[in-house]
Amino acid sequence: MVLFVLERVAPASVSEAWRCLTRWERHADVVPLTRVTVATPPPTGEGTVFVARSGIGALAFDDPMEVVAWTPPREGRPGACRLEKRGTFVTGWAEIEVHASDRGGSRIVWREELRVRWLPRLCDRPLAWVARRMFGRAVDGLLRGASAEQA
Image (cartoon, rainbow, N blue to C red; front, side, top):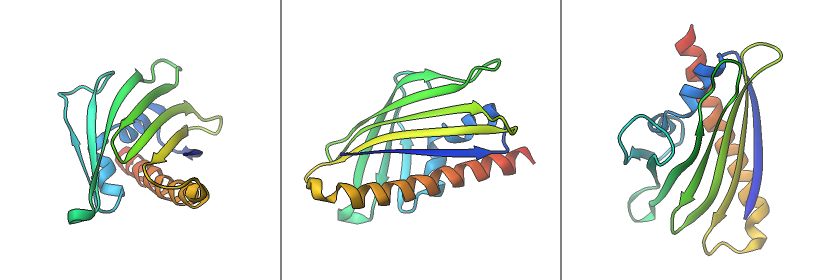
C-alpha cells in the first residue's frame, strides 16, 4: 500500500479547475492506454460510479470507482470529493480538493492511497514513485485543459 499527495497551483478558477478534474471521461485523454466509462447518469454526486479500463488486450484491467463524498466549490468554499476504488486488482481511495490560491487561480491537493493486489510490500517504494509521476502528469494534463478552456 502506498499513500501519496500531489499539490498543484493553476491559473484556472476554482470552479473551472474542479470541473476539469471531475469530468471523469477526460481522464482517459491524459492517461495512456486508458478508457473511462461512467456507469451512472449525470450529474456527478455521491453514488456516481465509473470504471477506468487500463492496458491492452489480456493485460488490461478494470479500476471501478465510486464517489462517496461530493462537495462542489461554492461561494469561497473549496470543492472536495472522495473516491473509493472498488476493483479486484487495484483498491484504495483518492481525495481531490480544489481551493482558492493566495496567488490567484486555484490550488489542488490530490491524496491517494493505492493498493495493488499480489504486489509484495517491497514494491511499495517503486509503486509510489510511479504513481506520483503518473497521477501528477494526469493532473497537469487535466489542468492544462482548464487553462485552455478559460482562455
